[in-house]
Image (cartoon, rainbow over all chains, first blue to last red):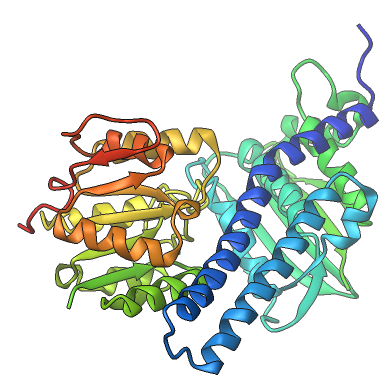
Length: 242
Length: 177
């Protein structure tokens, strides 16, 4: 049986993303359409019952219809372009550091049952906004945090930080591992090892590919401690923002 | 005047419901997030209408990982936790089969809680349904999909006719304890 290439795996990962995203986008579109329908029904009801609908109220309902339909068109556009290269730029939405913080916090909460503690630091620029593909960002962050939760030495603290530097959003995940794990970690980034039967690093390789598609970088570094057979692993996730 | 609490993070949707219900003579109170919802004195209301899927804002455990999919259920549990079984309608557009199954399982364990799809009623039609629910009247001409959910959540005393369901809602609109 032919071994899947990295390109095949990325394609599979994209298909998975589409499968995950489709119901979410459909739900979003349905919500917009329901709002448009409801506003139209209210206008119709008020006309038919000859009630004195205030012009301002009528204008608000018309705005509701227009905005809902516009949102629906936007969501449909995102869905249509989900699997195209264009999607990477079009899916960029304005976010603030506050929202990045919320996103990271949500990711960390998913692993709060693990045997490590998380410490999150977000640069104090809550009002700065920039364009970012939240879906891809979340995908990569989830992956690297999951790796940290999985490989960090039990009872230690995983440091997660994010800040804007030189037009890039830099996210760092830093944790302590046993040195043996460090050696494995070094191999995570290698596509050949990534597809070994145990599956170690598979997700991280895909995360790296997605990061590259975002025009960013995902790098791993490790620093062995002088004693105790431990090492510090740092995963740098850097993605350009506009 | 009958009082209805409306809980939804979609401000457009909730405003339409509020407008329609007030047109029909109801008094409404709006909560646009979980924090505001939990501050409502729910015993004052004749009916609570709540969105099923909302950000849980860390108020509930086990909803974060589900991305707020079950927040409405947690609010319903909270309201009913002291024995005050105010009727609660959970509105949703949810279309994820596995999650819907989970919701069904949970709703079946609860009293006076209904799940309705937002697509099945417009706000004006919902005003009539709300009145029926509060007054314990029969609600007729329910869409089949809603009929299935009603059948799962309340006692049915009338025969189920596909597409034209008649359900006795007395149990749902039971007296407050």
